[in-house]
Length: 296
Ligand code: C2E
Ligand code: MG
Ligand code: MG
Ligand code: MG
Image (cartoon, rainbow, N blue to C red; front, side, top):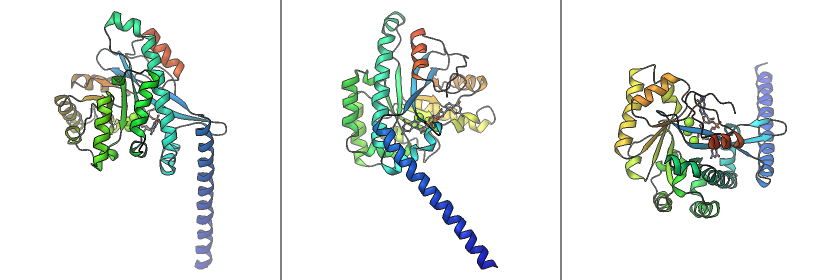
């Protein structure tokens, strides 16, 4: 009967729901253990000068090497960690780790810098809204700068538009304090959320990262090209540096370079690299132009 079928369906639904909850619960517990043991790995994706191909920065991207699940990507655990608040200690670990690593690159390449007149390599770290709103965040950044010895101007904190949307006073004062420390703020995934160019005027933003979805359509439509070019021009006028995300082919690279977009990252240049691979790049002062490098 329809009633029996309905009941069977409900049971299936309930089982699935319970299985989901059990899995979530398990994942939360193993995340707790992983956080306690700092059992994560940071990968580093090169950010390059689109004209010269020079390496200018790395974005730190977290992964979770898991004994049963293999290398777990952030999309599978970051939102969970945001909901549970676990992102606060996890994010603290990421920040400290990435800043310490950047300080090490700066020491590795300091000889070269004086010779070549280059700026110190920067590191860009993703910060969740929840993490940014945590009362201790600014102090934590200050402490990380002090203890690692990273040049504060080479630390970029990537925030998403969700942080800026609220326009609240705390966000403003915290950004000001971070700015006074010399740390730079980036808007990540620009164009995907409630994007507003007025953020650039309202907040001390130094970097704008244009989301991959815009880069994908670059060579395909006039409108997409015009949009990215417009954003790049406005940002440039306001003294904000633009980084294009998800560049996968040379056509995209050349279009971006020709419209005056200075920097980019993407599989065309390199995938996120292990810390060892990243160090080799820094040491060898490798030019990434057109070079395909593995990683994950
Ligand atoms: P995101 O910050 O926008 O990072 C860029 C993502 O795009 C990375 O994925 C990167 O591997 C991928 N990507 C880079 N170039 C290309 C390309 O040419 N093609 C394609 N298809 N993809 C490309 P990943 O590492 O899986 O990270 C996903 C998201 O997870 C990040 O997006 C960021 O929002 C979040 N995330 C990663 N690490 C952290 C972290 O330490 N803390 C926080 N709060 N979030 C993080
Ligand atoms: Mg990012
Ligand atoms: Mg991004
Ligand atoms: Mg993105």
